[in-house]
Length: 336
Image 1: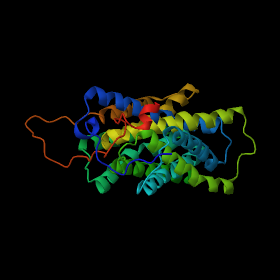
Image 2: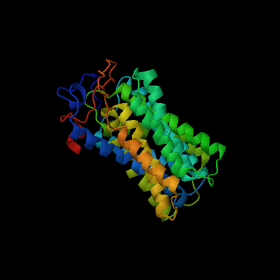
Image 3: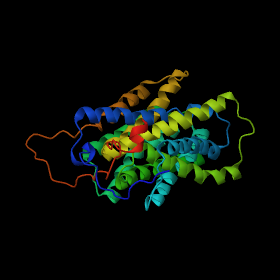
Image 4: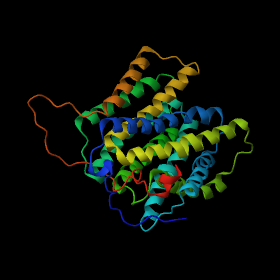
């Protein structure tokens, strides 16, 4: 395998670094990034309907390690220098801790309740961005972030919702670890010559290896039928390798205030699947659904400037050192 160069200098002419992306490019990037949380919205129904219960570590490991090893085989690039520990930290946050916590929450809570806990992520990201990136969220995006959580809550929280303490803690823990992973991914960027598939491979492999010894303690399911095998395959491919690659590509290039609200798609997809399975939406739930969608879309727009007011100079969000996706000379670019 190859190792990326140690230089973190920007790729010459990279639109995501030296120039602002064009609106059409940003819209396409946002749409592709949104596919990731949309696919994650299927986690609850797959977990409860297809996977054997009581094995969240095993499910998390299968969702991470095979896809990570496949990505490493495709890109043939290993971390170098301080990226060994950075990849390990990101893998632990985004994969090793997140995946098992998601499966615990999915098993112990109704899908809507578990998803609502994840909808609080934009607010956590906003707080961490202040601490780690010195980027203050705009009042516009912060307001819509709160409204998005309220909207999702109206959709999925009702009198029938049962709250399990372990499930709630697991859901909040998963939300916090992913929020930290988003901000650190934005802070560290990528070394030169490395693309999102490579970063995904590093993190999936690191997270999967972290879970591997814990699976030996938890044990494996006594039986994996065809449905469970299909569920693991879906979560590991579409919900794991593909979704994570799209997500890290978008997080590296979109403003952190624009990418974080996209996670609202996950509970909304979960709610739509529930409705397709026979769950009806009450008028308050329908209103919440519309409110959450409006919040998601509004967070992608710049705040309207009031007449007579001039823009105040502020600290710009730091751009990633290298998104990797614009470097046509990398091995990853040639293999796609």
